[in-house]
Length: 77
Image 1 (tube, rainbow, N blue to C red):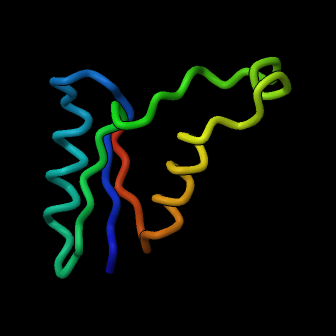
Image 2: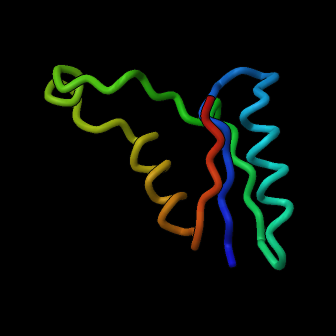
């Protein structure tokens, strides 16, 4: 099964990302995609920004990536 994993941090040394990668690696038979949130230039959610400029393309890309996987492993601290 396609498994997407990521840590809920944009730090280059994120222990959350390391933990998500480790946890996903323990899933037998998983086809793993390791996501680094720094790939997506997204600001904090703002209804004003969305109203002025629409939903950012990066948000659509992120959603598509999630939808293309069967399961997700997320580490948050």
